[in-house]
Amino acid sequence: MPIDPDALLATVLSDVPVSYAERDAMLYALGVGLGSDPLDPRELPYVFEQRGLRIVPSMASMLIPDTIVAGTGCDLSQMLHRSQTLELFRPLLPSGKLLANQRVVAVADRGGDRGGEIEIETELRRADDDTVVCLLGSRLLMRGDGGFGGSPPAARARQTMPDRDVDLVCDLKTRPDQALLFRLSGDLNPLHADPRVAAAAGFSRPVLHGRCTYGIACHAILRTVCDYDYTLISGLDVRFSSPVYPGEVITTDMWQERNIVWFRCRVKARGVVVIDDGKCTLFA
Image (spheres, rainbow, N blue to C red):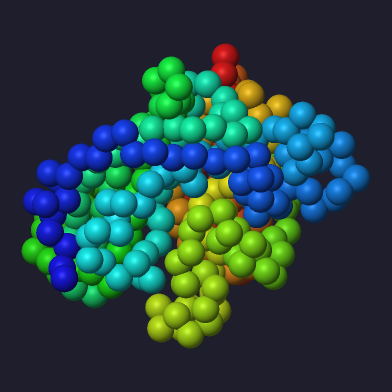
């Protein structure tokens, strides 16, 4: 069944229940590399509840319901993230019950052999008092579903990165089984686990989830800029530019200007940028 852009743009979901527990927060933190040194007193509170559990801000990206995408008829095994934005109005709690409002804000056709794009906006609110926690924007590339006759993608403004040497650099090594661990946080796309599915999609082996790379970038900023104080981060926007293979080292280059941290993530071993136009906003 091809993408129906008119039906998608008319779909609005309201008050979809979303819940997560402390165990989910710890599993997510492990999935983006925290706790790799179990003796690091700064990382332990993210993976051990008896130290006053902390939560990685980028986990908000895993709390987005997949109802709209799952109902498109698209080949989800070919889906990749193109970009992710996050605006936090208050820090996430270590566990919670939320309500999600969700809508498709754009659908674009890149052509028969280049796929389609779906852009989704999600608002998350606390179920107990209706307080808005965050807004998220996700742009998805449906690699196997182009040529449905829709409009091409609109031109997008690019972030202007600082024109100077980087201020800070952080190298974080991923595990060979990183995707298998991260998928337990909710993204079960076989592209990230099954070598046969990855090969059919044109990859030499399963690739890391875009949202895992996103979380690793957040981890790098937590470590290098925030001294692991998660309450400092109020926004995290990225454009995914190339996939990561589990086991690779991700280098995050950062430029800080007041409460903005501009960043770019690279895999130096292959000479590729995997996240570009990164912008982390800190609470002033």
